[in-house]
Image (cartoon, rainbow, N blue to C red; front, side, top):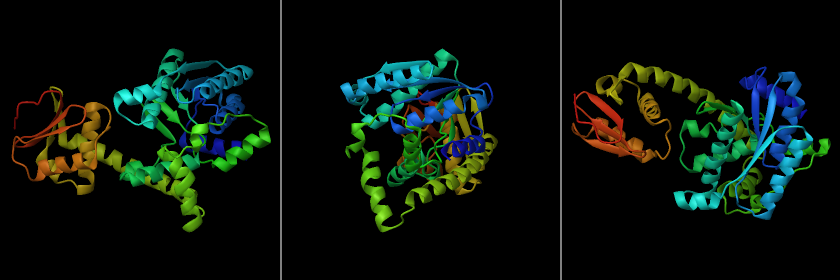
Length: 337
């Protein structure tokens, strides 16, 4: 039964505690409608308070407006407080020079966090399922992601003081559709899901069916299981690397100084993770960093002369000193020892 599987996932990842306030992201589609109804049915069991948030991304005109009305009516019918907002994501994507998909994701989570701050909520539940996980792994694979990326979406993830939880991540899309039908639950259809101009839709509608037909009919299950295994291994390596980062570095006047000699003693597989930990400590994320950037830092440490500099996205400067590697934000620091 789907609800039992969700309870198992919640327990496995420690998603809920008694007294939690949870914000449910409701798009009106089948996944989010199933998520809201399942959590509502478990509300008393876990002793949680549920809030609902709906964001109109401004992609589909009247269809989007109808989604908003549907979500408001559903929340009101369940006696839940809902916050709705409309944002012109296409305009934002054009202004920032990023894809509509990326802009939508940034704006959606920014909206969720704003609602959480206003309501005193710390946990955000979203409706990603096992099929979404498989699609994410493939998308990251073709983009050249490392172990962290191939680990897919975390079932429970910290995000700037909030926790993003995915209670349906071990549930297939087929199981969700079966649950909705059996429960006679209505939901909205997003016409943009049929358009293969979006990368995820191309993976969902073209690539995965091809892999199922020609290579492995259980490819979504396999990819989801692989993601879980890689995520566990990556979590261990990340914790290990963070300890090593602290042992080879120090912070002085806002700069992170890494002892080059100690750094070079580390296994090659850990060195990049130490640099990742340093950059995350410095700027709070690793956005826009590519394989080429990591390669430049490696060349800086191993081959370039003292006082050489590498500029990274986000205004990060990496300077090779005589004994240390200096990482800082803004103006380049004066080279030192």
